[in-house]
Amino acid sequence: MHKLQPGQRSPVPDGLQEGRLVDLVHTPLEAVATYWLSLKKTLDQRKNGAFLAEEAKHARESFIKHLLNLLQSAFAPEDCRRLAAVKQRNLLRDLHRKLDLLAICLLGIADNENPQKVLIRIISKFSISPVFEKEVFDIAQQALRSLDNPKTRERFLLIDQSMKIEALIINMMVYSMYARRNDVRKIDLFSEYIRSYYFSEGMALIQDGFDHDFVKYRLILLRKEILADMENKMEMSLEMFLGIRKGTSYEDMFRIYDAFRL
Image (cartoon, rainbow, N blue to C red; front, side, top):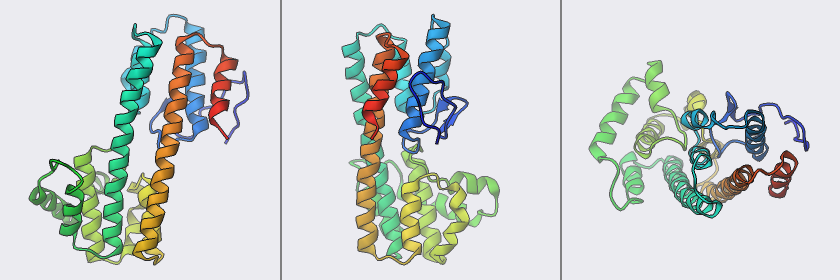
């Protein structure tokens, strides 16, 4: 990837779509920094920042959207930091839980476990179940019967941590039920719909024949790394956001980024 240099206008890197961040989990730190540096340049050029409302409206990444909205507010910097911390905590908690649910699904597939037991393990992670067990199985079974339909595949084979929890659970059950009935290696046919490298990594280990304990061990380590990396990108985004609020120069904005990279 192109390396950022102080004072240099950066190209749009991988992980951005039409100049906007679409996902913090899979977007490299450098791409996140590029977004904020580009935003800084645009604000310096346009002065009044009237475009921020439109930018926030179309933002797809939840934490970035939150910061863009705060950038338009009259809150003091300390209030912005506090509100950003609340959003960060909630988003990291949501990501942690989704990774846990994906791990339950993957380990169930590794053990060729009954999908009904897998669903019970998933539901047990909630104080109040977000789904009805019978409804999930009915939808998943109907989806399995219609996998020849491209629209069905696009909807029910998608695995993405940004999905709503109810939809993610249904789609996990489609994979669990499919793996129970077929050779697990056939799941490679659906790789284009798996947008979570956490799920892809776990599935690859299962297909390569690694046992339950090793898959579980690897998933725990990977979850830890994903959450730490996500937190680092969020912290950098917050500091660069605060830099923009304070009118920090482009060169000093780059120094903020430099503090967060290895």
